[in-house]
Image 1 (cartoon, helix red, strand yellow):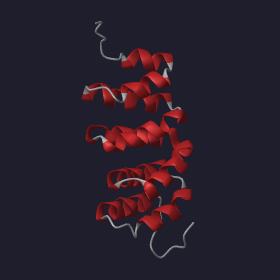
Image 2 (cartoon, rainbow, N blue to C red):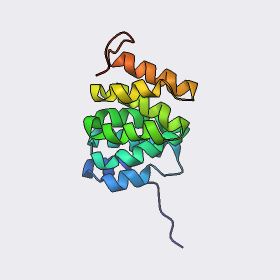
Image 3 (spheres, one colour):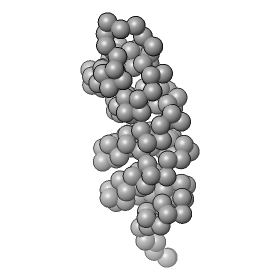
Image 4 (cartoon, helix red, strand yellow):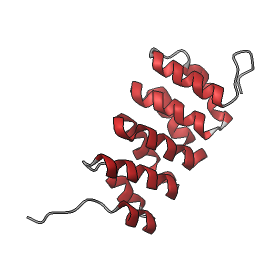
Length: 142
C-alpha cells in the first residue's frame, strides 16, 4: 500500500490550491493544519470560509482560523453571523472574535444579540468584538 507524505502547504499556497489547503486543514499534524489556515489567509479565497469556521472546533487552529477569516473580510461576514447564531459554544465564541476583527459594522446587531447568549464566554467575546467595532452600550445599534 503506498504511503503518502504530508501536504506541502507552501506549494499548495504558491499554486493557489484552495481545495488542497482546505484538505490540509484536516491533517493529523498540528503544524500542517496551522500552516494551511495561515496559507488560506494569504490566498484570501472566500470558498475557504466554511472550512475555516469548522476549524474553530480544533483547539490548535482557532486563532489561525480567526486571522484567516479576518483577512478574507466581508465575504466571511454572513457565514460568521450564521455561526454566531447557530454554532456550538466554541464556534460562537470564535465567530464573534472574527467578526470583531473584520471590522464591518453590519455585525453590530448580531453581536448585540449575542450579548444575551447562554454562554458567558460567548457574551464576553461579543462584547470584545463590539468594543473593537467602536460600539458602546449607550450608542444606537447600527
